[in-house]
Length: 417
Image (cartoon, rainbow, N blue to C red):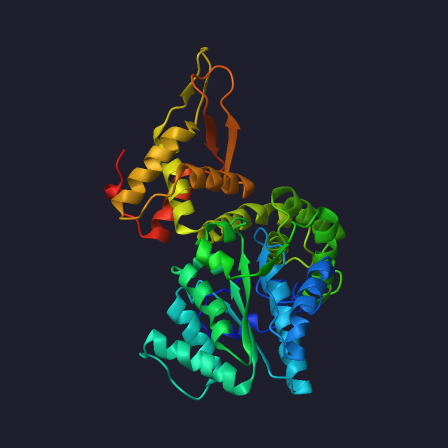
């Protein structure tokens, strides 16, 4: 970013001063989280497994459904996009009746929208807006049948689909109607227990494989960043120590490659704004706070709505509470009993006409929120009456509360305290 002097009367176009070549960036796009690299180091095992599963489609057989799990930034999306892109290219070159479709379910968040997107890919010159769901479904199955085509549908953030049981059941059961061709799913989710939440009837129809993408360690993140830096930054524009520091920060927080990439992107922007020719450790340190806020917001946005309500209940109580009074005289601020969080969550859910989940799923949600670093919990132990779980918010309550109110469209006057 270049400072623009508007003090004097302008004699040339406003953008003339930013036209010159950056001293920091060579290709800024490559150091953004949205870039899909041509190679994915440290994901060879997962890529091989997915290729092996999908390769039967090239022989005319229906592949097993696949479900990919892992925290944000562990390479699930990039791996899926890379494999599906190569599958499409190979199938086209070899004239194989195989189609690969990728979509993010944040945008296609209902059974109807997903099926309509599939059919739109089948018939790119036709408009199916306004047609009934049954008509769309029949067009999908008819196309597969007539063309003897194997269709692979990549559903990123599949847990965002409101009627996910109906969607998964429709896509898997469609194969019972097809004598030729087939439809397979690649479901991608940050929620390790996603399949457990499906209706038993839906689960029984899946017959799928599962792959877990583990977090990257510091050494792996350093190598990933080095490859990106070589293409995204000018020669010698990033100090080796800055790369190592960004990798160490990301590994310590989450093992998230996107965090590491964003740290270097923001550090590069800071260096450019200062008119520097190198990104140093200091720019990485300065970028850390803003990146953490971006990642936190992104992480919260990817949570299922019920889990957001649990986190919202924790943020409300944290903002109100002074702490847990133990049997002794000690007191720790911001520590909550799991029972009172569950009660508050149920009140909030009912106030916005949502059915609360069971105590069992509530405990599961707490486990996942802790895995993401959004909360900390511990058994109550000695000093607290009863056998309960103590919960503490991992981030500032007001920030979490504000993010969730905007995301869920919550009216805080509806909640009961």
